[in-house]
Image 1: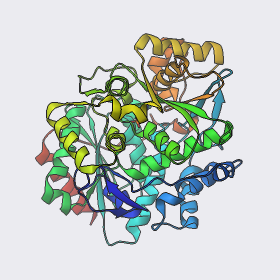
Image 2: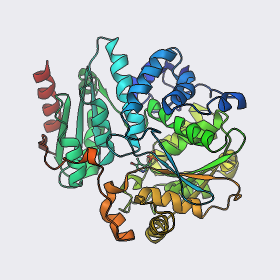
Image 3: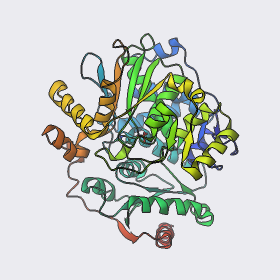
Length: 466
Ligand SMILES: *Cc1c(COP(=O)(O)O)cnc(C)c1O
């Protein structure tokens, strides 16, 4: 399988290079040159498969040329063997048509584990064959950092530097990162905001000498391999609810548009997806884009679902690429306009095809709390604020009642204990395997929000490791 950039200028690459590169050299995102296609018989053959075996069946065409089937199977068994539920992503029935898919049984209780656990193994495997060492640099406001650190801790030929805003992540979130004492993990608390941390990361990537000297790499959701790993659970859930004979809808709490784009890929591959509901909070750029063609940046309002508090959804570019008829030059021109004016109008004709699959819904704080209470009082389930936004959008949908709707539950409720307690009166408890967090030793550096200080720290740390 070969991959092309959404902006049409970067070289075509195979799966291994795309995984290690992250972003394309022309500023675009990599997508497969064509979508693999599964017949009804191929999908029916997934009935009864374990999660790891489903993952092999779904991902095999995407990794062709880089991994053979037995190598892929070994990686999937290791990655998904670290989940605490035997089904990996179990389905829970809430009422006659509403279902939850629990994506939070990984090591850090975030759905990001599903993709990052595999990505960590892919990095190690591809680097083993090369004489290269890479330096992963990221900024986090909480959840992504711990999932990335867990995935890369102790892996050969990789160091990870994770920047978080000092004092502005919860204590659980900080400890999930800083108590990982593997020698290749380096946490940095920045004296500044999350935006400062993100700007510092961007500045390091933009410093060409520094970026090439340390082989900088990113593990954020623009990495194709992460999206690929997320396509798997759409197949896994739909097959359990009757696919390929019965279509299934999904409601997806959305921020960067990675998770729901994976659902779009599943539909492109032949999975009968009746609808993809893009559930947003009041930070509703995607709802405006999909319902009215208005993709314009507003200001971010902090909410109880912080992983969805975004201004720009980086993965939306991948859908825009298809909306532009996969014309990289045309999309590059649109994105250039968007980057300077902070707005992009998507004409009705361009949206028509996507509109047949996607709907969107903007869920405010009251509606979100109502969904949390409904789940608790009526279905005996405690759900987190992100999942509640998905559930509310699923309940408000006008879909044919014969179609089951699966809401993606993206975080364990105990990660957002205060918000859950406010809505339901119940305080969720952290699972035992996360317990002990408050007794463990922490290690992190505190640095000013200055590019020179961060680059020096990276250089000294790298030299000490040699
Ligand atoms: C990252 C995240 C999301 C948003 O997923 P995207 O792929 O960025 O759309 C939703 N919920 C939680 C809990 C997350 O961590």
